[in-house]
Length: 260
Image 1: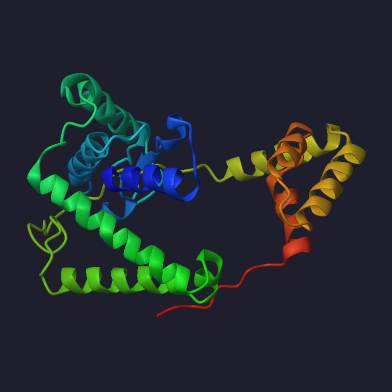
Image 2: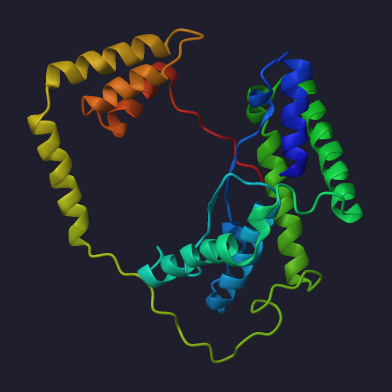
């Protein structure tokens, strides 16, 4: 996050010519790593999430989402969500880390890591530019391949024991008891469907069609800001599914080439 803030400020000033110092401030949201959550000994995820959340705050995040410890298994229970919330509150009120703008500033190790991450980020920027920009990079499966390669390396390290994951490939419990997880009542699906049908029955259908027509027309044009049209459509109870259907008519459906 420290490297990202420096990159943002530099690019805004030097590349885009931003003059307002407030625009140089990078505001960002952080979510703890879902990929780090394990189904084995899920209570240990509380510790993982706390460390990740603390790292985010030390890096200067403006907002934070802490994953619940049981999310590797199901949607979280109320108890799991409460612990995730309390994790943030303990960091905010009991650690003192929020009392300093940059608690890690001046640390040789952290500053060196920041420099290295920033340099590596610019290397990625250069590779993407050479591919023709991010859209072309996606079409050529560049980010997908990078993610797949990183996931493959990580999994290989875990399976070979080169990377220790507590409770997974070391410190394993042979007689681990199953965790009680959240069960969703199947009847809720029908209730949601009926709710949408009722909404469609009482809204102004002609206005809905007009909103969708305007959205499709604007979507077919380059450089049009669609957000005002999206907000207007939402206010008139156009559903997300209907908006997506409208965009599929204009843009088609992107089919990503599988990467292995």
